[in-house]
Image (cartoon, rainbow, N blue to C red; front, side, top):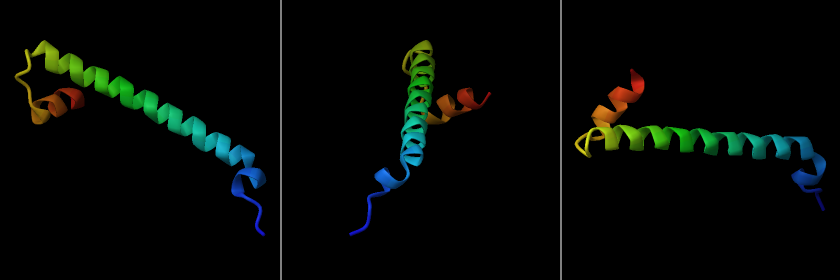
Length: 56
């Protein structure tokens, strides 16, 4: 019976979990920016204009 990866490589699992948390934090920050742009322009901006603003 093979040993589960989480028992064999706990550092790898920890790294994956930390990277996932960082990615979730980044996503929350981006969503906050998107919402701010959308609100700033009184709900008139669509995804193209919002994307252009984010890329400026």
